[in-house]
Amino acid sequence: MRTSKRRWLQAAVIAVIAAAVSAAWFFNSGKAAAALESPPVPVRVEEPVIRNLEEVFTAYGNLESANQVTVLPKVAGGVTAMYADVGDAVTRESLLAEIDREAYQLDLDRAQAAYDSASSTWERINRLYQSGSATRQDWEDARAANTAAEARAAGARLRFSWTLVHSPVEGVVLVKHVNTGSLVAPEAATPLYTLGSLENLNVEVQIPETYLPYFSNSGDGLIPEIRAYSESFPGVPLAAQILSVAPWINPQTRSFTVTCSIQPDNQSRSFLRPGMLLSLVFILDVHQEVLTLPESVLTAGIWVWKVESSQIKETARRLELKNPLSSAGFIVVPRDWAGGRYIVEGQHFLKNGTAVRVLESDNPE
Image (tube, rainbow, N blue to C red):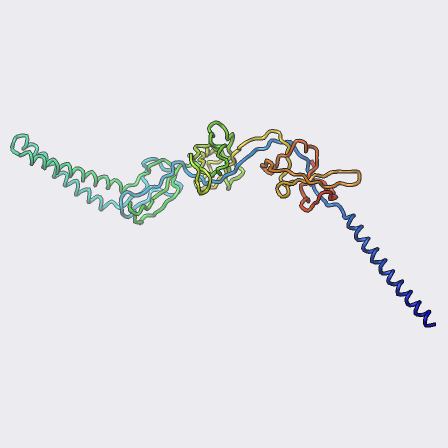
């Protein structure tokens, strides 16, 4: 009786173990099947499009007045009057400022009196010398004293005239550096005003050395077009033209300087100001009717994923594209890629042969 119970118990244990093993096998096999049948990866695709693609280089520089000048005092003293303010238009020889004239007026009066005395003496000695009543030495001394007095009077007159500061150019007051009551001196190089033109405007940009072949003969039309834009008014294109290309390369920055003139029109003249940041887009080349895809199609800079279809499913296949020409958000692709579908979104974790599901375009044409 005990033997039969023991055998029955052993059989029950064996049955339980077998059931557990079967359940584990069934569960694991189910997971493997589910893994093998994982859902396809959703992706978005685009087909190559033929377009004209411009090869460009963009550089940035500050707008400057072509004839910008800094007005410095030629004599020392206190500023007694400032006749122009920021934004005022001035003409050549317009009165800008006045420096205390009293001391220079006294110097001029003394020098003029000394010259009048020396001139009178010279005339008297000259008459005596002509009549033989004065020696040659007296005549030469009087003439030298008269010449020296005349020079001192001319110098005093010039310094007195410098107390009135006039504009050396026609333009607009860009900066007013001092106010009435300020002390200025030539030795201190204290500027009074900065003047410039709002019509003749230039911008200097630094171009990497690798682009030198495009600029070495710019006058022959190697740069077909330049587009300039203000960062403050990006929607208004500005006319630009190359004025000069520096004949040397900066060894520290490995770049060279290109100076361009900006020609304001009626619209841009109202807002263009020296000091503004401009972006200059140099059109280096224009590639006509090339096959293109968005730059977002690239992964790791060289890989493109193409969708291939079969009767059962759609899968991804990786293609290599080394150093494609890119510009304005597009890349040039081989002509034989026409008609294919290439993944532009969702491709970053794909493997060759991964099943994909193509989503409808957000902007169907």
